[in-house]
Length: 598
Image 1 (cartoon, rainbow, N blue to C red):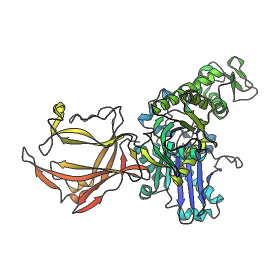
Image 2: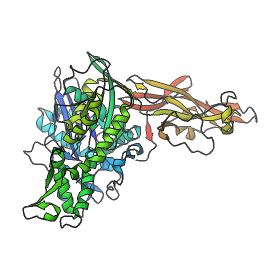
Image 3: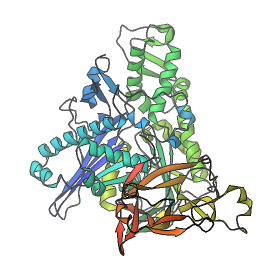
Image 4: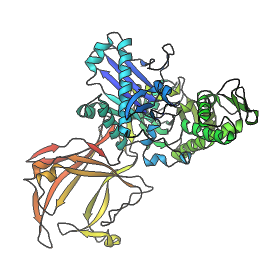
């Protein structure tokens, strides 16, 4: 049973009297958890966990729930541990691994995922509904736990519920399209309105949440000095996120990203999938090779064998059945399947190789002194040994946290909100606009064949105009603006200006972005991606649009001048339009529409 869905979310309740922080985090074991923090004024908020979930034993005290949903007739009926009772029931369709449906293409190009079939969503259920249903579920359960376990909990929750910030943890490889999707899912869940979401929703990468968790649970005095460069690698269920930080100061502690972070689609789920393939081949001619028995073996492998595997024993067992279950020819004795060290190790090979290779390429020639390994899969003894084998002879010390690393992102999001140690973040891509620039015979002679004549009769070339170069360090008050002009060959109507939009692109290819684009074919070179669109209602300008005449034909054309702003809001890159209307500056809403259809 494999379930991947919501990676993380936090809800923070703050007022003049008290504060609470709640975080949801998907676990390595395809599980999720909710952490929250509550304190009275003057107290430092401790981080707590929800330890009671429907379908789990009352006395288990387990904070983990499966991120999985059972649907019947297109409607969500059961969540988390409750779903296990319906996995083999033909009346229900199961949504699992649903986070993988949201991964951008840039995260799917990994040899680890070759041949990986992502389970389809239930019939007629779009991805946003799955997310909305699961967000609504964890929110409801958390409220119930908070109300029942915090003194005066109901009154506190009701007083703060309508304006507490919500914080989502996302893989380093997710960007504005995925963030906007989660915003819409939160709105669809009913826990916030669209107007509230614009102000209350925050995003933090798993890498940044993990560094806050790591530094809170590791003694840093011995190794963290000003100008020290260190890495944080968060090895989770389906993604491994790596970020490089430079310590700007230790008192107070302040960090800055060195460059844009890295994210590779690799993790514990792919070890499970590889072991499933190994068992299907090994037991092909055994009575225990049917899908139900293989699934039972994988569950036991994931819960016990995988967590303990270090690679220092000659053989390992998967205890999946009963004493009457025997097939000695295939290594099954009394319900236990025996595997050699080489067989188990084979399930790890692609995953660990992908992780170490990704880290080496990410570090490049930088002097990295420490690597903090966190995340659920980061607790794997075998992965730790492989990371030490590869990096410690290069002078990079592997550091692990004292607390369970599976909590790194959930608890880290809480600590992140309370402390904000990271003061600068690196842009992952180059952002820009596509527009025409005046043709210069001296500078642009080589591009003569790509020129065009615009409405004003001017000779121009079509260019990708950079707004944010990749690896630009973005701080909380960062903003960049670009003057732009829309030109029309007929007077634009109010209806046309009322649905005005500007498209922002990202260059995700190798090397520098293309200097000149073909003006006619509408095709972009590989790596130039339409990232998002900015909306604005400029209908009030219809009576003040300026006009001029074409320098060659004398035909009139009309112009609208405006500014494109990119800025950080709640650690989220947003965009907006500004324009002057009757001498007064107007600012459009910071609305982002993902260009990727999710």
